[in-house]
Amino acid sequence: MKMVQWSELPSNPLELILLKLCFADIIRLSLVCTSWFKKVDAYMSSSTNANLPHLAVLMFQEKPEGDESDKCYRFSCLGDKKVYKLSNMPEELLDGLCIGSSRGWLVFLDKYMTLSLYNPFSSARIQISSLEAFPYIQRTQHIDSAFFDIHHYDHDMGGLVVRTDAKGLSSGLLKCVLSSDPLHSNGKFGLVVVYGIGCMYMCSELAFYDSEDCQWTKFGTEFGRYDDIFYYKGSFYALCEEERLEIWDYDGSFPLKVKEYETSLEKRLRDTKQSLPFFCRTQSYVLESTGDIMLVVRFISHLYKDGTYISREEYSELLSMSGFDHNSIQRRTFLFHVYKFDFNREVLVQVESLHGRALFLGGNHSQSFSTHDIFECEKNSIYFMRDMDSHACDFGIYRLEDKTIRPYNCGELQSTGSCHFWVFPSLHKSNIQ
Image 1: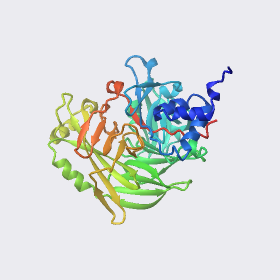
Image 2: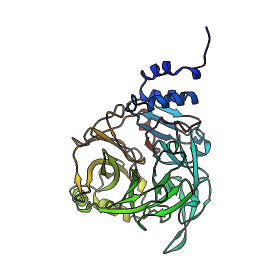
Image 3: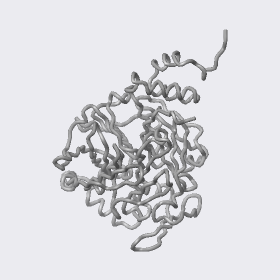
């Protein structure tokens, strides 16, 4: 009997195997070799399999205390209680910071202060630029193993220096959004980062990177506070200060603002906050769902370490205390409001159902999926992870119909206080050689 290599297995028997596998196992199989990449790509691209359920992957960093050599990234698939280790990651990424995810890619700031895109499923990597190429940032300087200085320029105050550590820097790089998957667009893409480095974190602005000219350019409202941004059908949709939705057309060169809508959210949020007996903050997201542009408001309470809620008066007193440590209080999500934009009437309409869909929010590119397209996904639910104003362990599943939250149980995730992001892998890797 003639022996053949697994990589030379004919397409028909391989397709019979694929029919028996879930999406998670198809991803693992596609990573065996280049030959199987192509066969799986053809299988997934066929009209018969175009609507196969996709996969939501939760990626998180594990940093054992006192043992820097053992840090790694792990992931778990939605509905799968197993936790897997991501192997063969470049050392400079392991020593750096993951600051977000978009279109199946993780966005890293490595230990050399260089931004990179990294695809955890194909191991493809695209180096973007040094942090020093950001608007108004002049240079970065390591002080010791933990701290470094960021030299930047401020219009009003001139040259300034911010001393920060890795945690402080990650809180200044808030959201990263790709216009397209670089593997599907011949390497051409636009990248937008919501960042607050250059203004002492008091505001969050937009920086745009073009893959062809390899330059960063600031755009958007000067000294604004951008909450979220996403890309849909040729435009970036940016939410600024929860009060304005800005639409920026992008034709492959540079974003151009074409429209702006008022959200009129201020009174609604104020009324909700004042009705509560404790202090809370809000974090807002903007995304597309079944062709509608949605705005989601996340309400986050503040608690003492013993779980007691902090009142508005108590929080004001804490802020006035000298040397108050913000990390000494916990933050916990307890409520969501969901709205959709009615562009004809130019109003924001609150909705009570997601019509069989689920939303995935956090430090990742905000996304909506039909629960028929994601394995083990609960309809009319919001899967949320920690975010810029959230606590490390603030994650769960919010049911919109009964306004309840249940923990998202994912094995080792409960024991880690590190960053975690939703990632939605794509198997169409025809550009990989």
